[in-house]
View 1 (cartoon, rainbow, N blue to C red):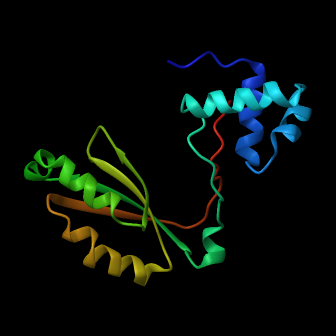
View 2: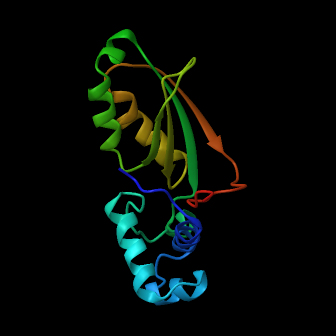
Length: 154
């Protein structure tokens, strides 16, 4: 069971989303708490799963992942009956950063990153199109990024 988030919790979460390397003392100072209660709040939110982890965010272009593709996947009837097999295959592809189950004319939306279009073409033919049950893939190339954030509006 999760406890209700108050104003302090929300301020702490907002700060951590912007810079997870802040110490509990730095966070406490910015939100107006002493260090111990601030640390306890952070620990509680970790234990409750509100804070799922702390990561380092990379600039994908600076490490050579210049192409971002959104792929709409439609499964055939056999594929829909083997949903678990499909999802396990997708989870095994490091190129796929996100996968969502959709309602509507397509079954899944994938966010995929590769070095370039040629790398996506190899990924598509050697990996994605080999997943059993896929009927159709519609690939949409993102030209530029207007907004990208991991921060939730707390």
